[in-house]
Image (cartoon, rainbow, N blue to C red; front, side, top):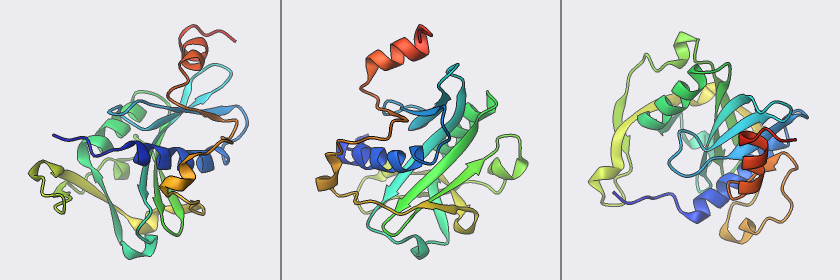
Length: 186
């Protein structure tokens, strides 16, 4: 099965993560996760490296937010994010970047309404001619998301960002990950 997430998709997610990181209080850092992880980003407390949030980011820059009454997410991705949050006191944040705004929603793994009791459906993309790109999905009511920012330019030209928020740690920052997360060095 082909991997449809490209470097351009990851770059757009980084730009959106940069917007979200700017909203975080001091003492919290966003750390990018490798592709195929349970979630795109984790938010950790800088002082003790405890995970505060699991963050999944979806970029839909060619569509306006108001065009959809619900947002679709692959069931396996939703379950992975919710399961990660359930194993700790952390919450799961789902963020969608549309052409006109960035919206997000917090999911609490303890709250029954956030556990997909309403069921899963068969959905996905059919425009690529790949039968394997149709999977079980869940839908989230668009009215349960709140605006968290304006959408910056997510085109390929904008991906050469040189100024990241001080609360961002990109996946390639291996030395930071080992020093701060594994060895607990300050």
